[in-house]
Length: 129
Length: 382
Picture (cartoon, rainbow over the protein chains, first blue to last red):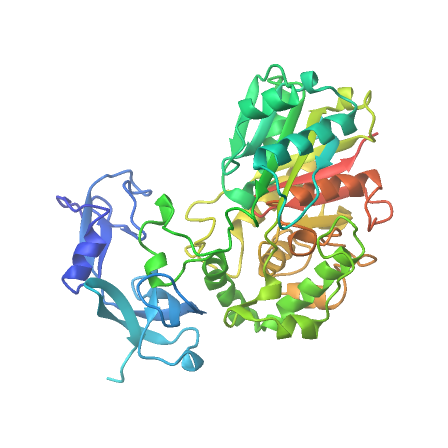
């Protein structure tokens, strides 16, 4: 698992979003995925990080409707805590879904949204294969 | 492990009026509360040699000293984590006294949290630890941040918002008979709760949220030996601790394995029960920090007052009312009395042990004051 590292723990996720990839920081020494990222790996003490592209697939662990959000969008939107298949949780928005249809544990997949020139990783319900 | 058991006591409490517009500075509120606590204890300002407040408190220790007349301070410390650390102030004060680092410590918290900067409004930026992970997705108020944690609990145990409302009805019932409460004389029904507007759909309505208040509170901690010579009945600090757990977060608590639990409160509970030898059945009154009604549910379960997922029924059966098995927030709590960042709940704990509360629980001998991430058990001195 040991590698050269060289990825910025603070920047890797956002650099991935710009490339429309979901990148998580992974300890270059022991392989632990860490999100939100941190400067030091709590498992082994390493300061070296790689970026791992993950599937972008997961399930809705919890969710709320955010009315009158102050940043990014004006309209109400669904905030989700996604549990990725890789076992890592992250906060995002659920798109293309009526709030009345949201439920816990629904499968979701990542999508990338450009809002006023700022790209973010968001999610939609997984489309039938 | 001692969790500072039994060596120290709270010997004086003081406060200002609780309002929505104090009309005076936060420093003045702090001075009024601190002086009232010193006077109530039968001490002089010059007896105080230690101070504890919140990292978030805007009142400088030196400014307080020169206003109140506290001449020398050899212990000044502050507790992290906002209201979650409210009971940690007592741990700091007890640790200072038990170690000999100070003899008389004043704990204070004072702010104009309604007429000045309101916590409940959207934040203007992420706090540093939050990075860019939350606000850009619409988590811009404490109500939204906490609700994303609560929703999983509601899902797992099939709660609706009305279940949370049953807590609010009790808090407002207690406040209605407490002249010190903002909502004195104003009880509500569950229908009132269900008619209040959504703050975070489908989790929190307006009446699930604590108040925003102006006011100041203070209390005095010293040794049990010295407490016996002072004016008030002795209220011992039987245990005091904090509970901070890896991967936790004060507002974005989304990374613990099981979101139906409150691991920080479970950790404080383990320490308190182990160090005091008490069990949940020994607690006569529980003062439970509630910025939002659901945290009462988590904490009732964390301390073992009821089983995991059973708080809904425990509350619905009337157990947390005066006369019930475990009266909770007998002053009306932060929803009913006021939001002085949780420290007003500690003052109510002191009054319950003294036997002087507006809604007195007969014979209260052990009172838990839990702020989730910190907690104390208060007891009757001999």
